[in-house]
Image: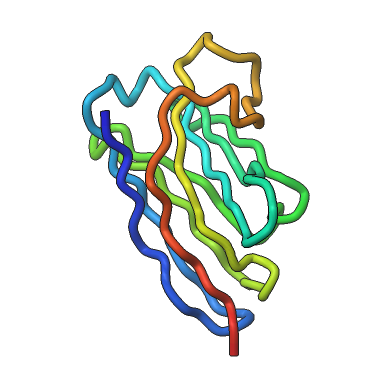
Length: 126
């Protein structure tokens, strides 16, 4: 099983980034996919999740209206479009997978997720 994030980097406040997470080694379409982040000195926090078919999404209040999660099951990839970025969005961003039926919707806790990526750094600074 592999989840490989990409697309992180340095961006100015107000800018945008799109993160990608490529999955392999499991039946991607049978998993709810999510994004979490961890800033230095903080615990890892929930950002967003998308249902197995992509029809349903759920966001943390801190990113609602600015971030959009989506998935492409044919490409086995989940995305996180991040707009209007703020310095407080600076963190390592992780994608994660939760087997459908494994947790109640929406799965927002670390313990809900079965697989994790290694993370990609996002830094928002002028």
